[in-house]
Figure 1 (cartoon, one colour):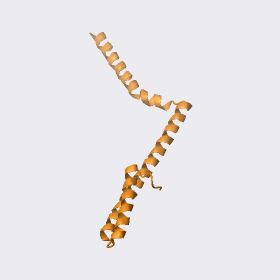
Figure 2: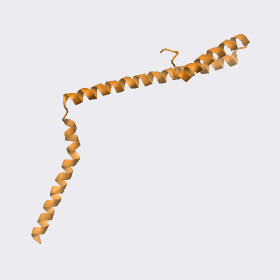
Figure 3: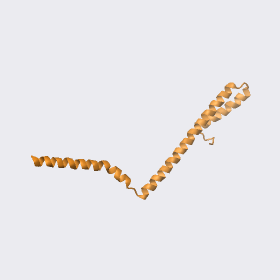
Figure 4: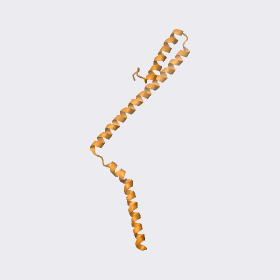
Length: 108
């Protein structure tokens, strides 16, 4: 019976070491990189940065368009002259069209 208990302890210990090895294996492999992987990762990171910068500029442009639309609506409400209101409404329609197009008619 003693031999059986020693064998079971040995198997448990082996299982523990195998579990520890498998747990740390992704960390060990991650530390080993080849130059092609590093270059690919760097290119991907640069592309991601460019994409985020573009998205940020579109968000800023959208916010500016919405602010301009709000300002024009306030000007239309406060203007007395019908001719000026018509001109402001035309400007408002242009801004709303730009907003629907994604700001294509406007630059940063």
